[in-house]
Image 1 (spheres, rainbow, N blue to C red):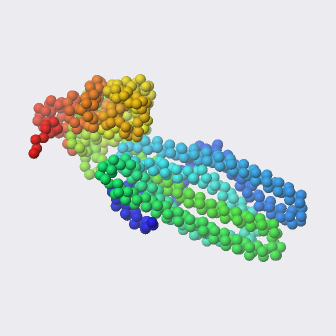
Image 2 (image 1 turned 60 degrees about the vertical axis):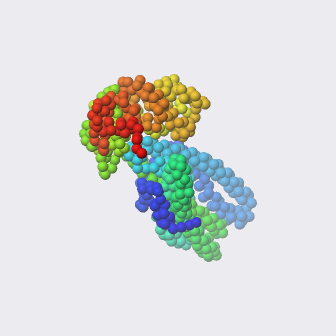
Image 3 (image 1 turned 135 degrees about the vertical axis):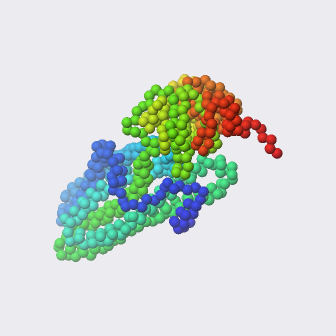
Length: 608
């Protein structure tokens, strides 16, 4: 089942899908990043953290005191036969262990509560930040890859915050306390048994970089696999339609095996740390027995002190081993935090100025001044476009795919900024106004309507969360959706599945119209919104639009030219430039590109 990791990666990367945005980052341990991660503990520094730290401190002090008390009992009670003193020592030990149990219960409770709060805060910050990013960010990344950052990578930090940090504090205190006590008991014996520590630290240091890189690779492989899994589920109908289940399964097996190989290598490298500790423990124990017997024979060490020393030496290797596990845990957390902070540090490609102002009451006057736009450096989507849409005007855009229609409406909503020139609404440059004030007055209806899981009522109310039930129903009635909604099993309370698969294409589109109109926009953008609708549904929508577009600026993109006959003005685009412009009748009379498109769409073919 195993195979060379590099070979597995090459094999998977040559498949049908590739995710270049994810990569292994080969850097030294980033202490500033760890410090940034620990700032998420700050809100709890005065509440849960002190409580957990106090409980941890009590438990640790008891663990350090118990062996000392046992050694004292051997020398002062058992050896001289003092039964009364032995009973008192036993009672004190019992009380100490009871207190330690109580402190451990509260430590675990408080630290778990704090850890869950931190993970909640981190996941919330990441999701909120992702929502502020521009369309270009989502153009370059798959939904599955983003999902992995918000779920898997954040979840991998849970163990660090629920156990790692407090265990680190506890183990450091334990080590300092143990070493101090060992030197107090016998400096000579302590120096002898610690001779193996430099060797152990040298070996473990060499493991660190390889372990960290291995866990980074695990995160990368998980991200790639989840991205493909997400796309495969969404595209299952296409897979089944083309009978590509076996090919899809073979490719997923490659990704799954790559993930398995990465986990295996990472865990194998991490597991090497514990044998190093155990070997050091064995050597230290051998030195203890050999040299300890010599010290007892010479009278430099009592039997009770020897037992105490042996107990503490056994305890010494326990936090050392745990520190190795915590370090591995920290490496996993760093691999995930690098990916999380990469997103948190991502700046929107459409930034909002600090002194941006609200656009105020919008009239709907749209103006493009010498606007150019490029999605990449290869070609222009728009080039030196001048455009003026009057308030309340219904303006239609026509042209082949790639002509620049969607780019224009994306610039109006400021999903992108022009690479040259300016876009203005009501005389204000869109770069100068807040995104919230702009987008709250612009509604967009897309060809591919997205329906959220929930009720019909919830989906329509998404356009205006403050709307009451009657306002939702009125919006649905205006676009002609009320009749089919009332015919559903639970009416407006009918639960729809993800993406609204229980609804027809036309029904989903009507809901999106109701959603947009409930927002009461000053500018309504219809991006091929009727392209997938049957003729009967289209007639319902056209009738609703005649009433609802009155007084609003509307920008329509349509491949079905029958939907824009009544537009006030039609612009025909080709490769980002304007070919012709005018009303339907004016463009027909020109006998130009628009007339040719109308004839091609409405005249029956007599070929053959």
